[in-house]
Length: 327
Image: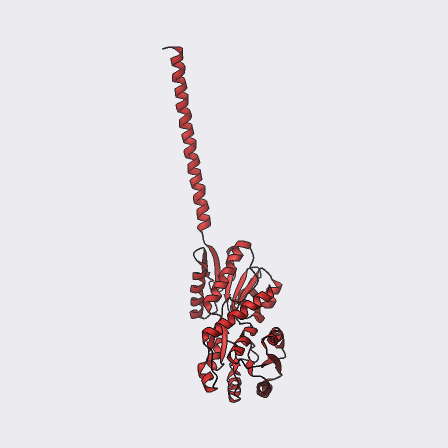
């Protein structure tokens, strides 16, 4: 064989070896790429975990759990806290249902992020102020200026609004007192100094106002007083607006409220903000409200009612106007 032939054979063998090594390297790179991609996919697909501390009412807790799971989707797993459990792995956030649930978790664990649901603004505000980013809430109560807007829609001729407050809760009504004149309503707050003064003070309030605006004030509106308040108001041909859906069933004419499904959607957005930014956003009200009406009370007092849809549209307009002012 000639020298040129031998060199050609050697070159071919080297090319063959090189190609084999190149293919081996290529295969290895492919395997590693697949492995890293699989690990990354697993990490991304592992759901983030949120814990839920229930209210103690099984039906309510189950209902809220289903709504939250639907709103959060598959990217977030919702786990109920075991009985007595107040800590979570890696300080995962806890959703609390109701004031008692919040207090139980907060008193036992000062580090864990908490999103409080079914709590009123007055209850949770101080905790949020002292712990921004760690404690947040979806407010349960409806802003009082929206409740007043319902009263104005039901009684377009109304010009005066009566409000009952105790000395401890009078500050609760200051924001709405400032907003009512823009609606053509002149508010007046009547202070109840003692339980014995409740009905006499209520009578003076009803002589002043075209309707009574009731707030989330347990010192005034509670199971032991609401019957007397509603009967006294009814006998004087006046109506109560607010403070909640439950009181409409008892005899208030109307009240705004946020459905649980809307509150769950707001909570879902706050939790997703937490996972994206490492802290909870500021508390907020739900972005939609509905109106509960007691048609029987309206008929008894000969009050023609707008439809629920019209009242809810009025609430939406009022909420949008308030957001524009805040911005």
